Amino acid sequence: MRARFLHICSLFILCAGLLRGQDSNGDFLRALNNINQSAIKAQLGFLASDWTEGREAGKKGEYLAADYIASILQLYGVKPGGDNSRGSGSPGAMGNMEKTYFQNFTLIKTSPGEEHIMKVRTADGKTVSTVNLANNIDFLTGNPYHGVEIEAPVVFAGYGFRNDKLGYDDFGKLDIKGKFILRISGAPGFARAQLSPSELSNTSREAESIARKMGAAGIIEFNPGSAVVGTQPGNEFLNMSPSENNPAYGRQRADYSLPDKTSPDNFTRILISVKTANEILKGTGFVLEDYIKKAESNNVNPVPVLKDKTIYFKTTVKKETIRVRNVIGIIEGKNPDQVIVLGAHYDHLGTASGYIWNGADDNASGTVGVMTLAKAIMETGIKPDKTLVFALWTAEEKGLLGSRYYIQNLTYPIKNLRLNYNFDMISRYMSDNETRKVSLVYSESCPVFRTITKENIKKYGIDLDVDFQPSKVPPGGSDDRSFVNAGIPILRLKLGYREQYHTPSDEISTIDWDMMEKIIKISFANIWELANNDW
Image (cartoon, rainbow, N blue to C red; front, side):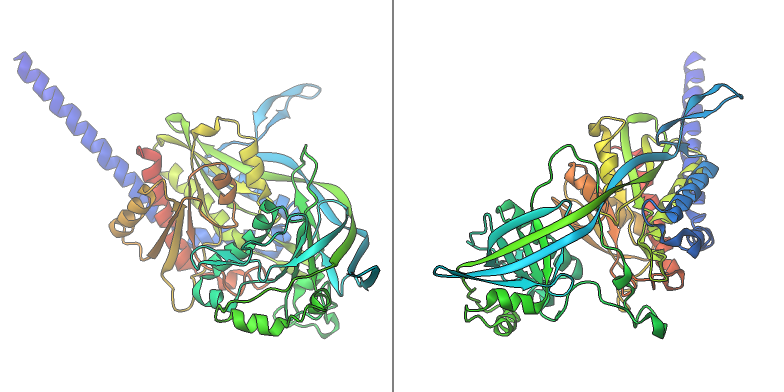
């Protein structure tokens, strides 16, 4: 009799467990189906509206956006994960310390000062000839973090382009230590034909990193098609559209950085006109047009030796502090020692010359994606195994500074941080011919990211064509870079750079709502797997 009773109890427990599993799956499916375009449109409609004034870091519009995001997280029941603040108590009494949704910090804004001088000096025996150049016409300071005065030799480095995939290296055996490198902007023609836009962008961006490692004093860069550099006057009186009159000309030049206890380096960046480039190359017999033409087909290009040439450069700067804030929410898991950060930057480029950069795709879309995922997780009513942090970063457009500050000021051991799932520009397909295409950029140490994505696309009928791009050090210029640099695995679904990128034309009217819904749904399925299983 006792054995029969125990058998019945065992069956009851087993059935209860199965029912709980079915309920859990039902809760997940209900939350997945509640991710729809109506909810997405409502939130993105406000964040990318003129009310938020382009959401530039530290400005009123961004503060308004941050308040809105925090209120939505609170509405969904997501706990605050930012700084502590003293709440309001009774009159005359101090309130208790309470957690807020805001992680506040300070940036240093550096903008050009009053003095900018550049000279090309050529020695001929005991005689030195000097050519004085005009600021904002012949040359433009590359936003230094501090004033600098330097004179150094110069070395021509072609495009300053190195790519292992193509077996191409402009740096080769050049001796650039303590010297300026002179480089052509972009990449050689043959490389543009073989690499994707993101690969080209990453390789070009690495030129400075390579030059620094090789001990260069700085980079002097020019576009062969630019007769003049600097801020050019627009035709405001014609009331042209942004596509006809580039509104970037009216944007204030400035650099932003986190306060640093160390002294800044003296690495110098200078943008010059093609006229200035030819002045530097004068006397070498080098023909720039021939070099560029040969680079179209990857022909061997001998580089000129800039003998007895030096560049004198001096500039001053102005500095001020800017207060900014990340928005942080937390859904506590059963295991507080396992953390996944879902992140997106909510800042954009602000306003200038009467235009507003509303940044619908970049990155109101990613911001709404993270907020929608927070809602979906809460709707399941199930506490995940791992803790989920929902982080909306400020100052991505200023140099990934919000995410970098978070990494540098973690409130938990960094070993607990398992993954950063980044959302940046998730609402426009790659091209008119690739409306289902999306790239999955991820750390190759975590092949599970590929496995679960493929399984979830099939299981839930999500119509996406995914190009999987594992990498030991995943490339890119978004906030996941801050986590990559800290040795944290990352995962990012990447679409493409369309013609609206970083223009006032990045408006809600150009959003692909179907693509955005699919990206959020596959991400929810992936996160649910990663948050509730060992990997």
